[in-house]
Structures are given as structure tokens and as C-alpha cells.
Image 1 (cartoon, one colour):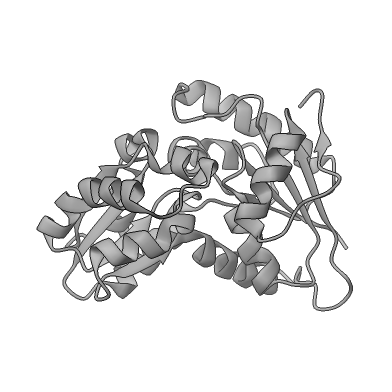
Image 2 (tube, one colour; image 1 turned 135 degrees about the vertical axis):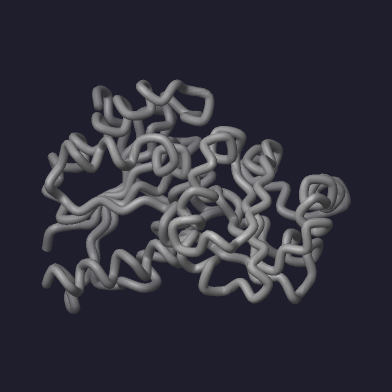
Length: 263
């Protein structure tokens, strides 16, 4: 059973893995987190493309049948370029989230939150415009959300205050749909929902990516419908740190995370 390959700059892509496991329980998964070179958001476009190609070449050594780019920065900056280099199907996180947001919005006002790099790239706005030019997009960078998640600060007074501060322009813009444009952000979903209100639909790109992966595998005749799935996890540095954080993302501890010395 050839596996699905997933890569991210670090640990955030595990939210995508969690959804893949939930929606595709029979599929083998190989995950690579480039923890030695995280974060990608501050790197140049050329560097992000180079890292992404190296990550994909590593996954191809494991004979993956499909590659999921679980990194918003790579999906924003590099996806069109890296698709030209490989024949294996490759899906990012931008298009599935944008498509679902356009489908979900009732007043054609969509919000996007993400890292500075993702927001600066305007990738979500451009993708949403492709689906529906009439949708008005308000995009806000929320740089403190990632460290909150990685430190385990998923609620409380400080977190709520910062979330309220960041999301104020989105509330003022009257968005009825909000894309969580970073794989860390679903862990803050309850606080974000509380601040935005129950009437605002939150779009978790990880869920939409898993749906898209399932559709493509099914259409290509590559879907595995039986057998016990195997999940392997590789990192480029600090497997202990990754293992500890993985519990927060997957809801269970990870054992036997392997360190790759050269990608």
C-alpha cells in the first residue's frame, strides 16, 4: 500500500494528518517536518521553493502516491512552481480552504487570518477571487497565535485578549466566514469562535484538504479501502520537541519519530 506523503515546515501540519487519519483511516501516511529550518515564513520565495523540492524528494524515497503540502507558506509561495517539477499529484492548503469559504459565505464578506508571510502573499485573496470576484476579503496577520499554540496557551484571559485585538478588524468588516489560514490555528478554534460569535463560520483548511485528497485518490483509483494503516513521522531536527508537541495536535503521543540527517 503506497502511502500519502505530507510535509510541513514543522509541527503544524499534524492538524492535516489528524484529518487524513480521520477521513481516510486505511491510508498509510509518511509525514516530514522540516524542524531544522522552521519557520519558512521569513524565508525568500526562492529558498522556500528549494526547501519544498528537497522535502518532496525525501517523501518520494518512500514511494508516496500523493503529496499534501500542509504548509500555508509553501502553498502561498511555491505550489505552482513545485508542481511543474513532479508527476505525483500535489495538493496545498490554500485552494480547498478558499473554495469552501466562497461556498459558505452568505454576505460575500470573508476573513482570512494567517502568518505574516501568508497574508503578505495575498494567496487566499487571489484564490477566492478566482472562485467569486464579488467576495470582499479582509486578511489579518496574527503572529502570536503560533507561539501560543506551541506553548500550550489555548485559552485564558491573555489569549482571549490577544485574539480579540487581532480579530477586531474582521468583526468591524462584518465577515460571516473566517478562514483559519495556518495549520496551528485550529487549536485556537474555540477562542476564535467565542470572539467572532456563533454566526460566523470558521473554515478549517485541514478538513477541506482531507476531503480533496479523498476525492482525488478516489478519481485516480488510488484509494485504499482496507487494511491496517501505518503512520511514519520524520523530522530534520529535535524529534523530542516534535514528539511532545504532537500530543497537542493529534491528541495522542508519538513514538519513534525519526530524525533525518540529510534531506
